[in-house]
Length: 79
Image (cartoon, rainbow, N blue to C red; front, top):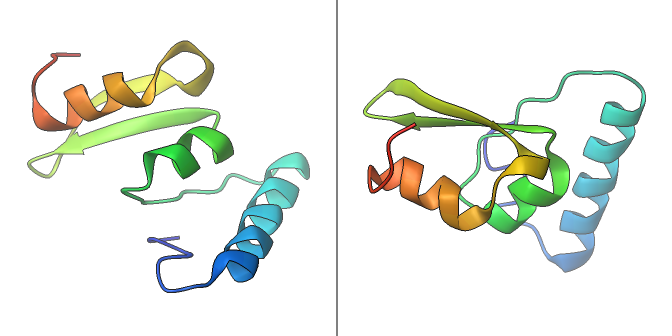
């Protein structure tokens, strides 16, 4: 899903997040591409960071912060 709730209202966004959580709970892999780091942190088990078209880092969500993800994206921190 590429920016799934980007143009949705608050209630619709909540429904999309509920759907993603249900799919995860049912054992499905869900790939979400987003710049909404708070949402990424809420919905993911793992975060993969791309910069310049290349995967530059991967982190378990429980072991990282939004600030670290931003630093990896911008290149302020190396993987």
